[in-house]
Length: 347
Ligand code: SAH
Ligand code: SF4
Image (cartoon, rainbow, N blue to C red):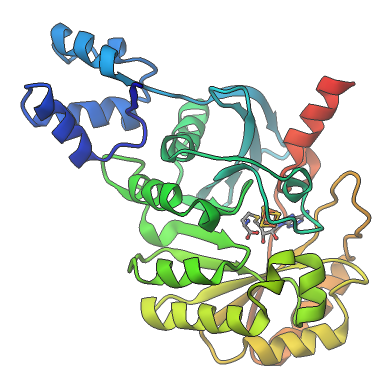
């Protein structure tokens, strides 16, 4: 089977060039075509000798994502892409623009997700498959290419659980960070996890300066096990211990994500318990009003309810931010463009 060039590191490309009897610097040329120019075929790499292109075409390929649909929010802040993979499956990727010039790409790591969180559109359908490193990285390259804007930040908050596809995610992180890759500063990369404790501990040993976000969503095991089934395996106390250890080992503050659902996890008593759990300085809380998902019965809390909840946790001594909404009007919430699209296809 042909090797997919998208997803290879500079080192690997240099070794590949050497293996084909070429000087090592050909590896750097290849990297430029793969990551800078987003070449679709080896034949397009015009500064490589023709004989090398012919040999490469035999042993290597470039798997690129295809734009199946694009939705631009009327306010111009959000652009969402539905992307096709080589096997006909689809994923989604979102570009979020901020007034301070930040350009954040929200990327997927799996087709679907096997974690089954009850409030999440992606969780409804189950896991179809993992994405390859190339498919993860190409989301950022494609967005840059399609919009002519340079991404400054990447968040692993699209479809799938990044730490359940650990090796591909880590390779993608390194390629996104590399100067020959997407050149995204490591501190501008955020991995969001549902709370796979062993993988969080493993990640802390990688000594990367990336940001870890942990999806908490409830301050006690009873409620969290209902919303986030993996809590039965790694309960709240273990998860918070792992989050604190991560912060201690890496020196990076960890974000706790808390999706707020009216009448479910937004009571004053939840806020107080959360403040007790999250205190101590190494954790920071991000409150996110639930985005409606077609077919799910949860309710989005009112703006004052969100503010009240945030204020109560803050009063308990925890740093709290409320996530600025982006793209609700174009279904930019986790998993939704894909569902809307699938619905249209069936209709
Ligand atoms: N699987 C990882 C990363 C992808 S989900 C995780 O769960 O952390 C990214 C974030 O979006 C998670 O915090 C998740 O709980 C949240 N999320 C999922 N569905 C949502 C919805 N309908 N509204 C708001 N946030 C949602
Ligand atoms: Fe998967 Fe994250 Fe959705 Fe849970 S919230 S089902 S882990 S994508």
